[in-house]
Amino acid sequence: MSGLVGWIDFERDLRRHRPVVTAMASTLAQRGPDGEAVWTGEHAALGARLLHLDGLTDEQPFVLPAAGHDIVACVTGWPTGTEAVRADLAAAGVRVPASAGPTALVAHAYREWGADFLPRLTGAWAVAIWDGRTEEMILARDHLGGQPLYWTRTATGMVFGSERKVLLAHPEVDPVVDAAGLREAVSQALPHGGIFSGFDRIGAAEIARWGRDGLKRTKYWGISTQPHTDDYDTTVATVREILARSVEDNLTDDPSQMLVMLSGGADSSAVAGLAADSLARSQSGSLRAFTIEFRSSEFRADVMRSTHDTPFATEVAQHIGADHTLVELETGDILDPIVRVGMLKSKDFPTRQYDMDTAQYLTVQRAAQEGCKVVFAGYGGDKYFQGATWFTHKDLVLSGTFPWVALAQKFGAANGFGTGLFNADALRALDFGTYYRDVYATAVAEVEYLPEEDEWQRHMRRVAYLMNTRFGIDAGSYSAAGLQLRTPINHPELVQYAYNIPNEMHNRRGIEKGILRAAVADLLPESVLNRHRSASPVSNHPDYPAGLQRAMKAVLADPDAPVRQIMDVEAAAAVAASLERLTKDRMARADVELMLQLNLWLDHYRVRLAL
Image (cartoon, rainbow, N blue to C red; front, side):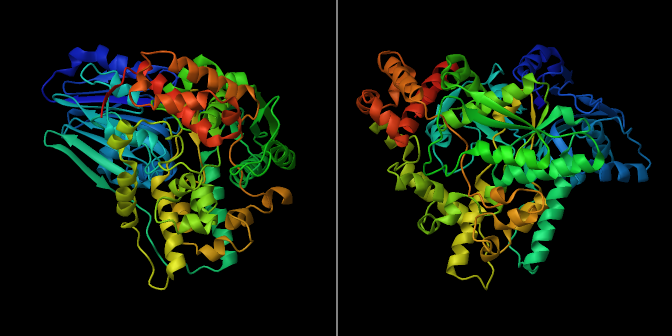
């Protein structure tokens, strides 16, 4: 997926510290499997891990002379909208060869217009630009935050990078996690940010400048509340036009390098249908599609999964003419200790949904082994087209807190999924109740309403706003495999448009995501258009709860297990003693999964808790 690192320090000559920058860049080796490059100046340094796509020679860091100084740029991700920028540069007398990649284009555009051009870029991207003329480092992310960019201060400067592990590789940065960071890692209120003490991230649609006067941050975009004046047919046509354009912009020139993660749900099927249609019209080749399947595990419906993915995904693949692969996993695959460490390192913090996330992690590893470099996914449909569970259950909409927290509480998890085994001291330090209340109040205070909206419409507006602004995309499992994730539904024009579509129009067809379904109705089988939302698959094989039981008993038997300092040992022992409970109780499984992940994280990352 490529990745960038950087360091700025006005009290050191960073040309003497190239090995440090190289060590930081090396932490992203899996993210950029095609090479590594480092540039060092007196007070700034940049490094990149590279992923070569479509034959572009995207030199990074790209150095461009400007008035006797250097402009140095790094870009991660895949910015779209670049052809319009290239054309405007040509009109201004600046010709950037078509074979040059996004980084060269960004450097030339910055030299011509400064950072003002960045909001014109769509897609998922993050950039770092050192301006030697002003001695400023410019850091920016795309409208929706599809590419991460973290930073922290050092004693005399700051370091930044595409993942938290970059910062931890700097000799002046320690892996300390305070109560706020641990709460952020395990709670369900906000998207995951820095987590480690002193860490922060550049926000979505943010441009930050670090110079001799310190850090200055500005936001260039955000969703806004506006009247929706289009009728139903016009709305459907508009959604189709924007989404089709976004899919086109994200396609690779070489289809063999690309595949779609296909679940047979509305979101992934919409993206797959549009991509296959575009490839067929251009006669560029067939689309590849991967679907996750658990071997030796029968599908079992639950509160999150209504139907089995495989039959629907197979039907979609046949309908659109895709080359379809079922990636069959065994339960033992996700229990492998090496896989556990790999899953952890893909995120740099624990996951509460270990079995779901690890199935995806293993599937994209398979995609990389087969030569894939770009993965299309349908992420975003639930957020923008009112498809998530909390849009469709009145009690969750009216809960007065984050509806996903309310869902956990509805099933007995008072502090959120996976938090049931913290001990009393940890719970006092984390103070989930106050945290959820305060951050929810802050979030909903940002919501703007239309004068004509009634109370129910205002509630739905709040949920839509929270989903738009508090639910990010975690591409960690993709980048850990050296793959670039592209999510065409996450287009700022489409997000802004969908946010203002009235609730009754979204649900006119009597099924969630009705507008999205109608927009691609000509491309997909009727059965898929009428399939209700279903979460990612998990294994129902008895080996999985048995594996959790063995792992938890091993932690309980280890007096030096680092998680013991925050775990209710007595409660954990009671859960570990009952295989039946771990088999039948999803809440208990989530609690054990989080404790096991926390133990591995505290140990492997040498985390020092400062609660």
